[in-house]
Amino acid sequence: MRKVRVSFTLNGLKKTDEVEPNQTLCDYLHDVAGTTSVKKGCDTGECGACTVLLDDMPVTSCLVLAPQVEGRDVVTVEGLGTKLVPNPVQQAFVEHDAVQCGYCIPGMIVTLSWVREHVPRASDAEIKRLMSGNLCRCTGYLQQIEALKAAIKG
Image 1: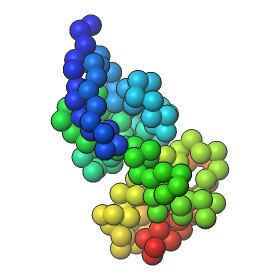
Image 2: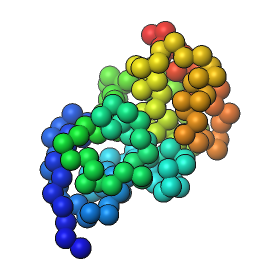
Image 3: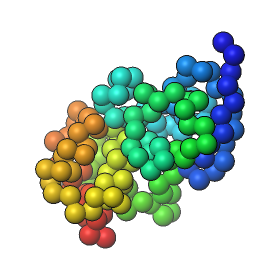
Image 4: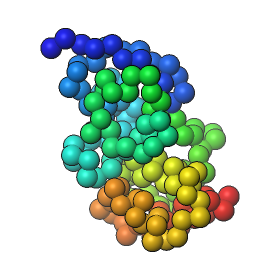
């Protein structure tokens, strides 16, 4: 299969690469770009482990083909903060023990960082609805919701 050239912004840096036309963004990000936070869970858009921001909207990257990001902006959890200066949601997850096994956490932090920025007055019910695409088998989501609320309060 003939590769396609794709140029886009990944975590604030311009990126150009050759990708297979049928390669998912999830596979590209994890296997080629080295953004290991992006996890392939279900590969059907149901679990949210591969959630990234695409043009500032949360998407499951397993349902986006890599060529579709041409000229667009992609942000993974690596682009939200650093160890020295974490994103407020990342910091709140640590402070509120909102992490257990950790597999779902990067996608969840991406989603909840978007909620913090775009729907800061969301009710608990709305937060639950907005994070419904991020499945966690270890928790009951309460610690993640409390972490988000703490991050919103700042």
